[in-house]
Amino acid sequence: MTPDTPEFTLTNLTQPTGPGAPKRRTGLLAGLIAGSVVVLVGLAVGAYVLFGRGMTVSGVLVLTDQSSGIQVGQDGSTCTGTGAFQDITGGATVNITDAGSATVGLGALDAGRYDTTKGCVFPWKISGVPGGKGFYGIEVAHRGIVKFPEAEVRKPVSLTLS
Image (cartoon, rainbow, N blue to C red; front, side, top):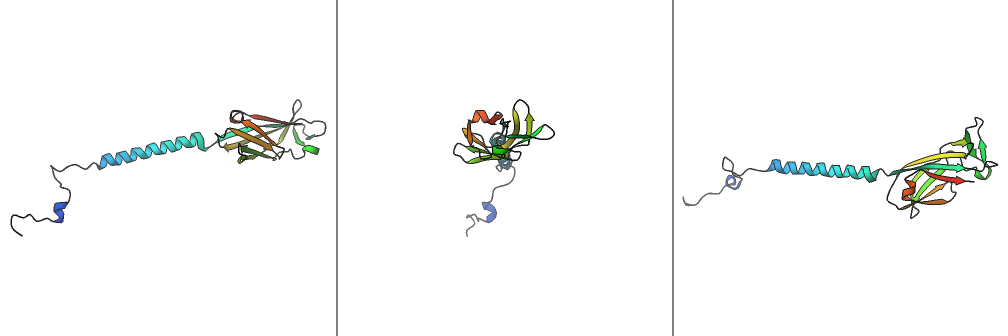
């Protein structure tokens, strides 16, 4: 090598340091990444709150055949189905389907409460039913599916057997 030829070493190829050296922007990059993460988490939480938990579908099944289809308990306030309605009792299956007949919610009737003007009333409630399906079917104890538009199942539904 000649005295006029600079010698390159590994230290000459690294970023210069000192008062005249350009400043790194690692703080800005870290801030942008952290801000992006916060925004993405916020969007995910918002989507879960709006769509992830689903809706709660609730209602009552009223059994009105008081002549032979209802057995009133000794206390006068509880009741159950009998005869042709013996499958209508607390614990009977409530199945919610979407427009394509896929099950989207499953629950059960609560215990029947006797109402002298209505008959035997069985409340039910099913949480976590996905919204946005358009139409829904509700079936109690394999008694046949009754179809409702989504706007109707967002309010308490009343079904009647007699």
